[in-house]
Structure formats: C-alpha cells, structure tokens
Image (tube, rainbow, N blue to C red; front, side):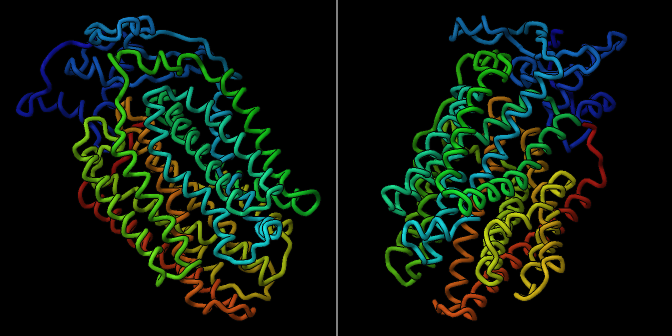
Length: 563
C-alpha cells in the first residue's frame, strides 16, 4: 500500500480524524501509524484511512516480522528490498515496495526466539557462576579480603553495564544479527580464559577475564532485544516475548550458581567457566543458522541511504566516566575513602560524565540522544536502576549470609534458590524488591530456611521480572527503527551498572559498620548494615514508583494500551 502524500492532520480540522490517529498517549505516533497501515492492508473493506504524512511512510515504518498463526508463515514489512542497497547514495523511494513474505514455520520461530532469549539466561548465569563458589575461587588466588572477592562479580557487571550502549549502537551500524553472533563467540573465548586463570594464580588476571566476559554479554543484550523489537510489532506477542526474555534472569542466575557450586565442590572450579565457554560457542553457531535472513544487515538497512553514524567522542567520555565512577565506588571499601586515589578517580569520572552529557546534547549521531528522553523515560530508568541495585545487594549478601554466618556449602545455598525458578516464570513490583529485602535483612542467623529466606527468594523474582520487560517495551515502542538497539541498551545499562555501583555502596557501608574487624559479630554487623542499605534503596524506589503512578493518573487518567 502506498501511503498518500499529504500534509499532517490539522489541529483545527476534523477532530474525529485527529483523535483516531492520536488515540492513545501510551504508544508512539509511529506505532499508531503502523497499526493503521496493517489494518488497512488486511481489511480491504475499509473505505477510508486517516491521512498520514508522507515522511512517516518513507522513514518511520518499523521493519517488523509479523507472524501469522493461521497461515503458518510470517511476513516482513520492508520499505525497500535488499536490492535497493546497491545504490547507497540514493534517497529512499516515495513508493515503498509492498510487504514481502518469508516462510517461518512454528519450529523455526521457536528456535529463533529460544536462541535470542537464552542470551539473558547466559548473562545472569555468568554472574551467578562466580558468586556461589566465591570463597573456593578466592582460595586459589590466596585472597581472603571481601573487597577483593567482590571484584569477581563487580568486574563482570561493570563492563556489562558500561559497554551496552556502545554495543547497541554498533548493532545499529554493523547489523544486530552480526553483533549478536559475534557476542556469543566473544563470551565463549573469555569464559575459557577465566578458567585458565587458575594456572598463573593471579587474581588480577581473573578479574580482567571476568571484565571481558561482561563485554561479551554486553554485545549480546542490546542486540538480542533489538532483534526481538524488529521481529514483532507492538502488541501482545511482543510483550510476551520480552517477558520471556526477562524471565530468563532468575533461571540463568540460579542455574549458573548451581553449576558453579557443583563443579567447585565435586570437580574443579575452572570447569565452570570452560563448560560455559563451550555452551557459548555452540549458541554462536546456532544463532548464525536460525536467525532469519530477513533480520540480517540487508533488511535492517532497507530504506536507509546510509547506516547511522558513530559518536567516538561521546563513547570515550561515556565509557571513561562509567568505569572510573564504578572503580572508585568498589575500591572505596578496599582502600578506604580517605585514600587520595579513590576520591580522585571518582572526581575525574564525574567530570567525564558531565562532559558526556554536554557532548551528547550536541552530537550529530549521539550514542545517547538526550533530547529523545522525556521525563517518563528518565523516571522509568531511575526506578529500574534503584530496584536492580537493591537486588544486587540482596543476592550478594544473602549468599554471604548463608555461607559465612550459617556455614552452609555453596551447593546447599544454590539448592535453596531453586524456588526462584518457578516464581521467575509467574512473576509479572518495585514493592517486591522492598518486601523481599526486608524479609531477608531481618532474618536471624539461627533460623530454619523456610521461615524467612524461602519467602524472600519467592518474592524477589517478581521485582526482577516486572521491571525489566515493562521498561524495555516502553522504550522500544517509543524509539524509531534506527535506535532499536539503543532502546534495549538503556534498560540493560541501568540493570547491570546499578548492580555494580550498589555493591560498591553496600561494601562501603559494610566496612564502616564492622570496623574492618574479623570476629563473627563484626562480620554479621557488616552484612546487616549492607542489607539495610539495600532496604533503603528499595524503599526509595517504592516512593518514586508511587509518585510516578499518582502523577500519571492525575495527568492522563486510567488508560489501557490497545496493543
């Protein structure tokens, strides 16, 4: 269908027409245009379609893989076929080609969704595989300082949260499928190196390998979500697929921790990372085969005269700022905040972040388009960061509480987290983060597992699986096609970077509370105060979430999204 080339609807014209085009403020203008175009395409009996500006027909239409359950195939909505890329200097045609169809049966679609959503499983498994056997790994390197042990997890979360924005942009430029496949391979290589770190016996080398593992997961996360965002238009199926992606988080962490404990206690801890690396290599090959060609680079850039640009200055400032701030917060508990190099690194990092915001506001092809983020988006991202930061504290210190104070083995603690697998699938609250943290933070040392810890493990996945898919869907539906990788990147950046920062903050509180003592009472006091830090963060998130809900209700009233 060729969209009519006509002026935008007049504010003073036919109100019925205007209201039909801008029916709901909960979806983007482009999403509404896409839905109208799709309706008119499949319903020939429609006598009229709201007039749509020609510019939206040329540039705005999402490249979406539409699955038709009745026909057992899918259609892909392309403005211009891949052959149009031959002339890279040509402007997009005003007469887009009709939608092309590709055959994608049920099994190929299931395999495509599976290899994409499992990337979130792998990302959280890499986090859990170093938390459960942390003391066993530390013993191989002769480390017994909690601040140094925290880097086994913080190094991974640091690079995962820092490089997501850049990897998402690289996907926008080089192709999401290409970066996704490469991400699995990169993750496999450095996972194997992390296992080989046992031979030199240097903790620094292991931390570097963990950081490079995080970069591999950073290559996966935004491009996985961009593939799903391009494959499905706004609607119930897209929401379900994104929810499946989020539901893999608790499964990944628990399974990763379980395998880490099994290999460390019954075999040798490097096999945790070697087996993980082998799985990543297999997934890289599988992704190359099952991701449809219609989502490859040629289809991604159909209708575009040239791929998006890359802001090198903003990238350098952004990465430097995020890394330096994170290093300062995680080194504060280790060396003390009175040490000059700790607060000096923090100041330099903050200055880099200010420079990043200034550059991005003026860049032609920004890594983070500041002007595209409205107050609702910023509010949503803030809530995600606060909630997942408190989750990072909960998961790390609950593990330490069980192993150090209750003297349980890593395998026993891993088994106690199995109920989270079921709740991860049922979870559909910022309130869940707060309640789960309060229950865990107030449990006595000598208490049965079923009294409080079990309840806390049941509740926390609801906070995880509510916040992630909701925030991702909101940003994805309000971002243009060329920024789908960026939309997915923002949520993942807040999730992973906030975990690392929150662990640094909690570590500072812990060392201040326990007076750097070594007795059991000092250790318990430090862990308790770290819990209280997480409780304060999650409570702040509850307050912000309630204020946001009230603000939205007063401004827009109660609305239900059409799709």
